[in-house]
Image 1 (cartoon, helix red, strand yellow):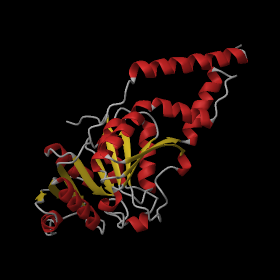
Image 2 (image 1 turned 180 degrees about the horizontal axis):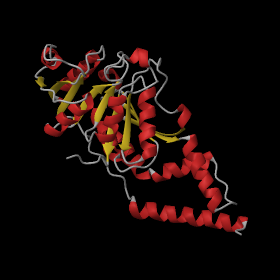
Image 3 (image 1 turned 90 degrees about the horizontal axis):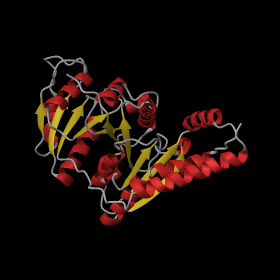
Image 4 (image 1 turned 60 degrees about the vertical axis):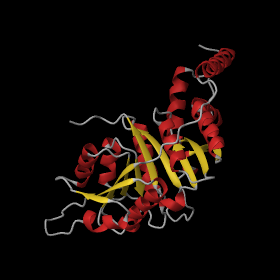
Length: 317
């Protein structure tokens, strides 16, 4: 059986190894190259949220001169129904409608993404339902499927008064676990951010995640003591490179940046009645079951628009 001194020695060895790894692998942080949209797909669902979705497209057109494609992806539409993509594309300068393919709403959206070369998708959630009536109960079936299959970064519009042009002054990137697409998500954050924006990296410690890891450690090393503060410090270490890159990018661009290790129960998003305007950014590896649930929960509870940047999306035929 290990003694307390042996456990402490192991901790010191792990810390020393971690420091050596950081010095060897991280090096001086380089600035990120902000990613800005050039061609976007806007999806309409026939609900009152279409106004906010189109307003977001108008803002991106004004800010980045984006090419805008509009899709009416409503379910149950007949040949006699007007095509909202045709009637409402005129609301965005230079926008053009595209034809909906057969299938459910998510099939039509994914088919359009496969056919068209776009770098950003904008759609409402819950799709085809009232945000006020659904609330935090569900993000909708369409969103569940898109989180699993969508290879394109997407902005999910939520409450009508949270318009994208008003939200890019405050960017909150929320990370629950280390993933390969977090630097790309950060690059998107800076690309969409307004001049002199406030950009925050929130490293979230979920209680369930902490308890699971503590249980594993207790089995492997019964004498070891791990608390939430130590785990939070370790989480910060694993994101050392991302933190450095975001800090340097913010300085280069004249923006404000902050790092917040934070408990899951108080991490963004705010409550549904929150009036503060912000854009939440979530990196997602779709083959990470914990990450999937983390992102779904954040969208469901968010009144703010949410940008999801996905990786490891399965290829479809």
